[in-house]
Length: 188
Image 1 (cartoon, rainbow, N blue to C red):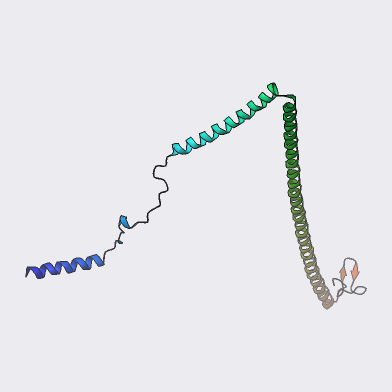
Image 2 (cartoon, rainbow, N blue to C red):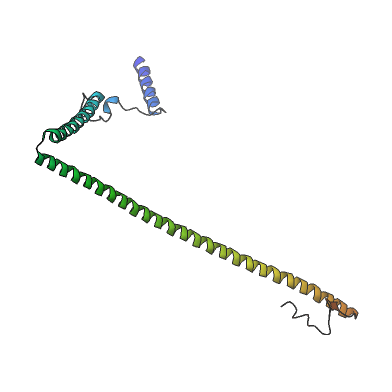
């Protein structure tokens, strides 16, 4: 009897596990492992390499200055002449490269200016076109409004003329009588 009850409890636990609202969490040992390139890497090593490179560059520059001074003060006339020619060629090269950079920059600026001017001209043309279309629409609307106003005035005059003719009275509209003016073609 106890086993049966115990078995029922196991079955109910299994049913509860299946109906659980919580998702199954994967084990931490199943995660994707990241590759480790250098276990002993520290930022200090990187900073040391940077400072070492700076120091080497500075030492090379100082050696270059030292060699130049050595030739300048203790060198033979031919070495001095070679050094002078080297400095002159370096200066010319630097001047040429600076002029070339300025020319390229001017060329780039001129191309950009041309693009901007073309864009501005296009915007102006579009603006003029839009304004022209608006003006045409306004003129058409004014003409339509004028036609409607003249038709309504013509209808009023024709009605007045028709009423006056029925009553037998002479018709006067702005100095004209019905005898000498054609009211039908007045506002066409």
